[in-house]
Each structure stands twice: as C-alpha cells, then as structure tokens.
Image (cartoon, rainbow over all chains, first blue to last red):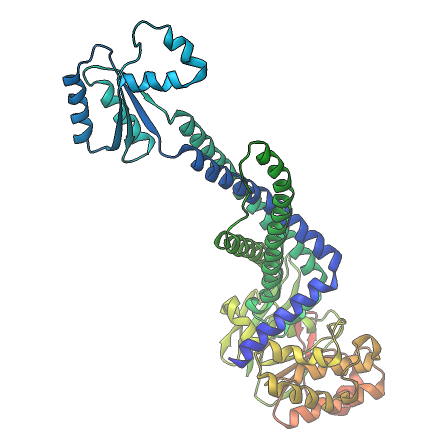
Length: 304
Length: 217
C-alpha cells in the first residue's frame, strides 16, 4: 500500500514537474483544449438560457374555443358540460359575448367602432387550459374540440412556443454533434502533446522497460499528464464562458432596461461544471492512453 | 538456472546471428562469453534477458521458457536480472541517486528502505559521495560503475554484463572485474561478455566462445 502510494505520488510529482518544466507549451495546449471545449459548452449555456426565458413567456398554453353565433344557452351549457367531463382539461373560463364586447368598449382604440355597431358581432367563447401541455396532448384536445357541435373555431395559442421548442431541440442536436466532434479533437490534441512528451523521454521509457517496468508503470505518469491537461483545459473553458457571459450580461442589461425587464444569462450549474471537468479529464486520459499504448506497441513489436 | 537448447536467432533479412547454441549455466556460476565482435555475444545476452526472442530452439531461465513467455510476464522476469550495458543507458536528466533508485521504484520497493539500499549499492561501486551529481559529471569509468550500481540495487539472482570493460583502461577494468568476483562470491550468477583476452587469462573463469554465431569447440 505504501509502495503503491509512493509510485502514484512519484508519478504525479513527475507529471507536475513536466507541466512546469515547459510552461509555455503546456499553457498553449491547455488554451487550445479550453477553446475547443468552450464552443459546445458555451452554446449549451446559451440554449439553456433561452429555454428558461421562453419558459417564462409561454406559461401554460391555452386553447380558445369560439362558438357559432347562433348557439343558444342550452348548447353553451352542453359545451360546458363536455369540458367539465373531459379528463384532458385542467380548468376553463367562460367568456360570454357581452363581456367580450365590454372588453373592446373599454379599449380607447376600439370604443368608437363598438359604439357604431348595431349588434354584437362577437360569439360566446371558452378559454381552456389543458392538464398536460405536451404538444401531442394539446393537438389531440384541439382536434377533439373542433368536432363538437356549435364550435365554430378553436385556436391553439401555443404554436409559436412549439416552434421555438423545436428550434431549441434542433440547437441541442447541433450542440451534441459539435460536442462529440470537439471531444475527438481533445483526444487528438492530447494524443499529440503526449506523443511529443514521449519522444523527449524515449530513453527513460527504454531503460525502464529493460529493467523490468510493466507497461502500466510506464503509462501512469503520461495518463496523469493527459488527465491533468484535460482538466486544466476544462477549467479554462469554464473561465472563457464565465468571462464571455460577464461581458454579454453588461450588454443585455442595457437591452433589458429598454424593455423594462430584468434578465441575466446564467452560467453552468455546479453539477454541469463538475461534469465538464470530469469529461475533459477523461478525454485527456483517453488521448494519453492511446498515445502511450501506441508507442509501447511499437517498442514491443520492434523487439521481436 | 539458464539453459539453451539448440537455440537459433535469425534476424529479418535472413542473417543468422546465432546457430544451434546449446549450453547450461548453474546457479552461482561465473561464465564469460568470448568471441570477436559480430560473433553473437550481444545477441546471446539479449536472448537471456528476453530483450529478443529466439527464432528456433528453447531457452529456459529459472524454469521459464522464454520463447513461450507472455509479453506481460517479461517485466517480472527481468526483475531477476541486473543488466549492465555496454553504452551504460543512464538517464542524464536524473541524479546518480535517482538513476540507482529507478529499479526500486519500478519494483514497488518500500520507499522507507529504498534510500539505504541505494546508498549501499553506491558504496559497493565506490560512488557514495556522488549521489547528487548528474551522470555527465562522471568519467567513463564512473558511469560504468553507476550502471553496475543500478544493476545490483535490487539484489538480482543473475547479473548480465555486455562488454563491461569495453571502453576502459586496464586499471579500471581490474577494479570492475574485482567487483564482479565479489558479487559472485555472495552467490550471484554472472554472465559477462568480453573480447578482453588478458582478463580471461587472469580470471580463468568458465568461458563460452562464439565464432560467427556458433559455439567454438
């Protein structure tokens, strides 16, 4: 146990020495990884913010149900009864035609027009809120209501929200693709920097193998190096995004003041940040593993 | 301890470095491999240390058949050997102490005892005062002794040395040969290649002579 700890401690110390030994090139590779990671992560953060924003605007989508003008009170109560019995309906509000006309009369722009009318052109209406706001459920409810007697028109008010929703979904798919591609890029970057490290330590590897080092022993410091570099790149990406959001929030506040609302772009949460660090460390580790394994394989096949 | 049975080594391209070699070495023996350069001495030592594999015949070291050995088992076999290389193979970015420490580190030796082991090995080769020096600061003979200290630090059962006195003058050669003799006296099996006839006449060890890849009668 002591020996195992000692080996790992030595490997880690050697790794840190290596990073500190070439500060500029370490810094550059960390920056490259950070920039590569900040792209998909940054877009993810923006999408998340748009989602929060659109969530505030949409509220729960409603269906406006307009009856034919010739519907009598018995037929209105029939619709009301159906709404009450329908399991998909959470609650609803009846807007009689007189109330609707009253609304218009209050509005300065329309009051003249309303006064000139000889009779009320508006129908009775219901505003219906669904129990479940999934697009599928809303569509089904909408279609069903259209078939009811004396329903002239039913309007689903959530169309724009659903369009935004599908755009966001598209955005998420695009971000995922970008993330996968740049994840590979991270592996390749690490592969290459570790390969350069291996070349500077070719003699050490050769000697260590000759005096009985296992491949695990030889790999270890390089795996640490790859993982540490990936982790540092992940932290750099986090920093880039935090700085970017800081500057964008300055501009957004001005914009929000013009619309007299408050809105601030939020950064990654703790869980997402930790996930970012973990994944970047893992990818760095993988890149290093591939690089050392390739070198060891070449050594082994050369010694036949 | 070591036994060769009709061993041949043919390199890609068809060159036969060794042909039909049969011999065996008992525990605690001191055996010299003699022959001109190109006779196959280095190849023979590389086969014993499993640095290369035979293309025919079989090699047994401590009852393990090297030809059939799994690659992953080779490092553990090598820990039974102390290897002294003609070109030393020292690490020039590490101090004398760290160079000798390396085999202990690889063998996961208890770090608390490792320091005294390293110093004991350096003491045996007369480099105790130079722990913190770097190999470039050492003379050729001192570098060879450092290589020997690294080979003996984990107290190997078999010491394999390839031309250990190749580039040294007679006085240094004598010192190194005396060291080898003292290791042999405490039970280490020794396998040394050399083309130094004077040395062989002086020590009168068991000699295996190679001539163009074959055992000379």
